[in-house]
Length: 171
Image (cartoon, rainbow, N blue to C red; front, side):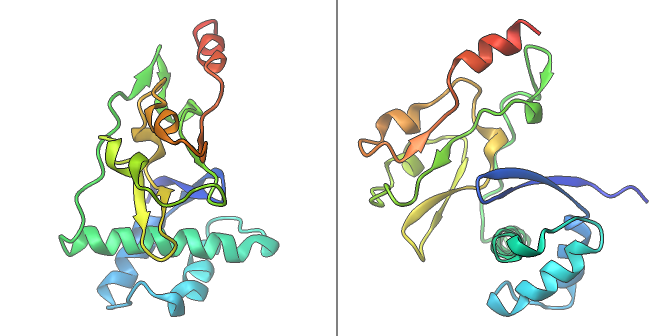
């Protein structure tokens, strides 16, 4: 059985994780709530098919818990579905191969929510615990758009240089 690969933002890196849908479905059907107690189980189950560096288990656990929470919210109807990426390709290149998405510098963010409110693609999830945005749907970001970064007066959001798009065109 071929398992799907899901791109997950872990720290500031997008990592392809195999079999998350199956793991999440199993946990959901067994009534496992997405709380701090489930982090070790998420690491154990995910680690069976994915490499998780031992020194980064805490970062992976946080990202997996976030993804499982979103999964549960979708299942219960408590979350609006993620927007599909506007395009599957850009200049003939698969969208997931284009590193165009925002990076949030939490230490600079003051929690104004301007980025979250202005993005129609639902790239962000608002983390109520820390009052900051989290990039949860990076490939929904329109290639070349940086409106959320431009609206942020504290420069808490950055994008790659536009020149990477020129380099893609020349490939």
